[in-house]
Length: 101
Length: 238
Image (cartoon, rainbow over all chains, first blue to last red; front, side, top):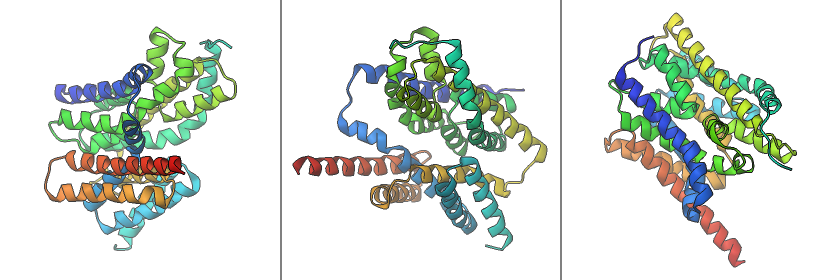
């Protein structure tokens, strides 16, 4: 159960920033009205963030990973269960790599 | 009807959280396995899950993890992923505005998307016990910390190689999140494509992490916000 000081510091920084988003958002938005464009930007941030992440991640992986994203997304659209979608994605990668893709 | 905070409300929140474990546990196990792969000890993994308690941002930070860790990069990653939580607290003001001290700041600490959505549903159904939000949040927090610990222990026991398909679990999680956020081709394809293209273009310029990710995210979000604003202006003119 060892902990490195630099890793601990990075984790504390992440925790602090996350709590600022959770609690600071409540405290600030109660007192201040943000401009409509900033509201819209915040609302629209999550999906492009994950789109950028998936594009970067797949650009560094093999074709099997890119192809496996399709059944993974389809499983989520069909059943809406995160655990199951992850299992489908991992199984598809395993199957495609086994098939030589 | 005044807002209350009772033990019974906390208990009902806990009971409502039990089925959620089916969705939380696999994601937590994946985060635990990936934390081990990036060299985090069990204690560090537990501390991260306990303090951050936000799966997507933990996974993203782990994907950007270096040795020694780039504190600014991981904090920035956590901020950008969790910025979506800023309006969540304000949207729960129907209960939070009536709380003080640990009940208020503790409830905010354990609030995640699931507890937010279920609390809004509870309040719409006439619920006035803010203990529900706290109980649900604490229960999902315990489930999250425990499942990441299970993932870490499992990863150590099985010793997966770097090529193991299990590590596709991280991108698969984000593909599933994207699928969950999908609305329609017209609304989503342009900002998502711009985000992906900007991220890949910035990466090709060899700019350091997390610049490509942030450039892509904000380019896509700006386009999405602009399109929303334009659609509202057209609707007002009509």
